[in-house]
Image (spheres, one colour):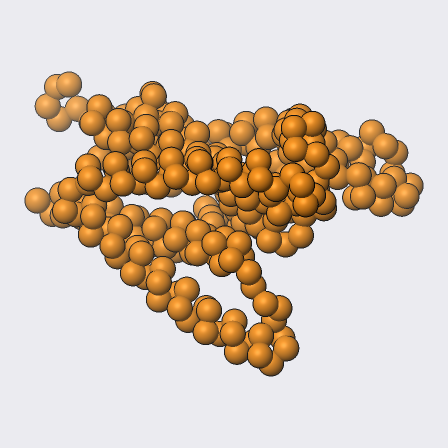
Length: 301
């Protein structure tokens, strides 16, 4: 490129990509029978009720992205990603209430492991955690496979920093390894939920799947840790330190609420889900802050 000629600024395609992904995800599901019966009982035609329940998750996911961008305009990256996380969690839970996603998967699970009980709050949270981590892992795998074009396609930030999306071959390898850890964590979470929903004689199989997937995820994280530099390790330590503070305060507050009768007892699976979600959110904050500091230093130099 000739001196003095500015390179055209690449545009973010995150909203379009999220819309396509949401539509594909909706297409894999079928309406929750209870909610479908409620809509048809109110006089809505069956086809219209089905189309409505398929459309609601897509609209909610797009709304979460757009509202996050509007509400986060002019704010720090951490605040914007907090908004994305909160709005995305709401859209995810609403999607779970509207649609039984991946309709062939429950039938396959029932065929292999027997009938499942209706999921309760913790089971829904485990399925949500599994879905988020698997989807995130697949997105990271796409970045590992295709590099910057995939990163630009999934970027939600209105102001694109080319340095941040300049993903080179060694980084792509790390992304690929990281995607394996995220996907296996999602598989472990879903398998744990299946074990909790299974009958007394059908718990062992999903427990074995959960343990194997969890072990692979831990091994991958160890491999990643060994390949991190000093700055990256500091980010991980900071993220886990902040997570520990939040979890300690949260556990203390919950124990008080439980003694007063305001909150129910929480089991180990609930604690696992809470810790995992807190770590996901805090890690996002710490990584965004560190990336911002690095970019600021580069610009200052």
